[in-house]
Length: 434
Ligand code: NAD
Image 1: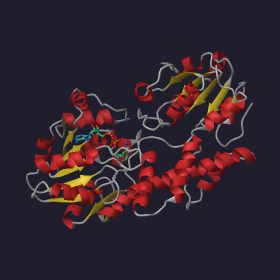
Image 2: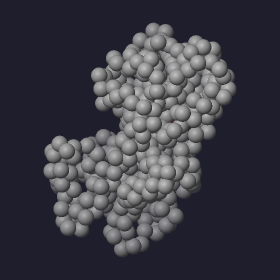
Image 3: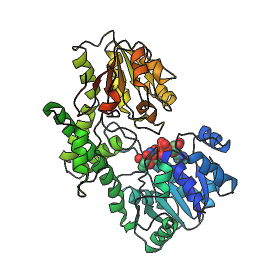
Image 4: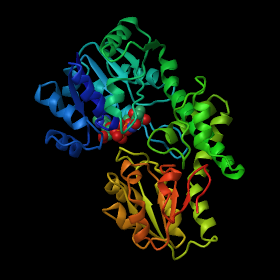
């Protein structure tokens, strides 16, 4: 099949490369000329394990191209997939400016029947509205498909090539069949449904995962007070098949470009039809509060006075194996520390440059090495569970710190890792060690 993917971000680029890997002819379009230039030079603008190798292979085999010229790509395609951003507006509602803009550009390029699929996460009813928008500009025939995406940054290539399921929302059987055929090589678990249900599946899935995270974080907070260990609690819960073990890892909460935005958008979607999604409101509130867990611990340790202290930060990406820093917990934690007179030093193996641009404040000491962050620090806070941190030499770490205090916001270390060190160690939902 001939496919155009519009938007070469975390979703569009990975999807485009993987559709090419399945043997399709794919053109990836982006209006960001800098990104396309990089891609044409064989560079990948994002950090995503395995993506470069697959992109190089498919380009050299002639199935993958990159361009800024949308209309030419659309004209040469049977299927057009929108994967542009849908960032949050201050109200929490999804901003559909990029979707609408791309839809108008597609409409103006139409030259015969095409399937137009929206892979971006969009509020219920958006596919229908976009179809109307396109229909208002062109009389060329097309079918709309909702094609929500479930990949996770950091394992996006694997998730795309081996998905748990594919969801196809359609109101036309022929178009649905074509999309099933496109995705059949990936999985047999293909759910074909109406368009609105497909749009809702994406929000409901993310809201449910966010709920699991906030739930276990609240359990962790109670564990701290009653002297239980949340990792054991989660393990004991997870063996129950009705519960499942995943997304029961306590920490400083979720971040990134999806969960925070999609939970808030679903609250808005519900609000627009006069339904107050109380449970999800609490999930968001708990998550927000959980970010300050690290701060509360620091304040307990230092008797409420952080001013003048030097605090090291390990990990700036919202999770490991990605350079994405959108809505990362590190932002608020570092801003709070800086605003309260703390000297902050920070390091991330991959996301440092993105975070520097995102942070936008002066005064942080940016470090190129994990150990440099710890040098002369009064405490070290681990915010992202990169493997590099788990493998750190804790004795060496302790030897360069002013005070051996470690706040593990992701429960990376086990009690035995700390044996033989003098660390005062706090984690989330587990007994502290000192
Ligand atoms: P992103 O911001 O990384 O990429 C979006 C790209 O679209 C940008 O490169 C931008 O330049 C381009 N773009 C915008 N308007 C355009 C236009 N008119 N023509 C051509 N290019 C245009 O976004 P992302 O993280 O890939 O997310 C895309 C969508 O997928 C969002 O709706 C998101 O919620 C959803 N999603 C994201 C993830 C994830 O892990 N990032 C997972 C599942 C779903």
